[in-house]
Length: 120
Image 1 (cartoon, rainbow, N blue to C red):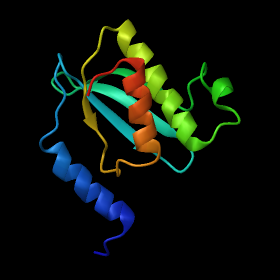
Image 2 (cartoon, helix red, strand yellow):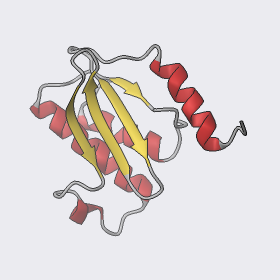
Image 3 (cartoon, rainbow, N blue to C red):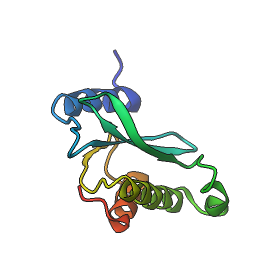
Image 4 (cartoon, rainbow, N blue to C red):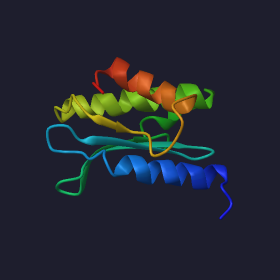
């Protein structure tokens, strides 16, 4: 199998997912970034449910994102997710990058989530 960027990301994702799990007191913050959008969700792996989710496609957020570059959009999604988490009294999470390198949009999202009040 040819080791392309996407294959290497999947290998990193599987390797990390073996050790990173979300519990009720410290759920998992999972992200996915496509070429156009950024998605994030808070997951309780014990129950197998998504507690909170946010993306660049949220209805209340799309107007605010217009005219901004992708890093700024990711940061705003991080802040919005942190707001939604504080409403559900979630403060501490485990960050799961899903094999993405901690750089660019991923780092901007993490910075926005931390500014919003999430601890990871």
